[in-house]
Image 1 (cartoon, rainbow, N blue to C red):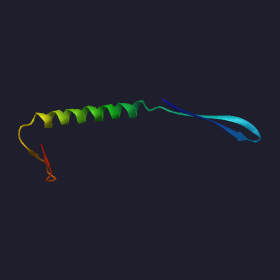
Image 2 (cartoon, one colour):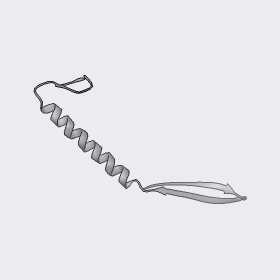
Image 3 (cartoon, rainbow, N blue to C red):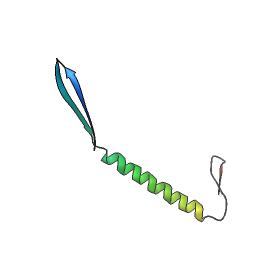
Amino acid sequence: MVVNMSVSLMEDKKRLLVSSKDITQQIAMQEQIKAQKEFVQTLLDSQEQLIITTDGKVLN
């Protein structure tokens, strides 16, 4: 959870403005992407031959 706080002057009085955002799903997605990248990198590292992708780039 990300929490932002700030003090503001409103109608000649100090007010505390607080907002929060649940980033649980965002963190889970980032971890999933990281795991997928590591898996693909492991596959590529274990290949003894060149792999040519459909966009014409050579991976080794």
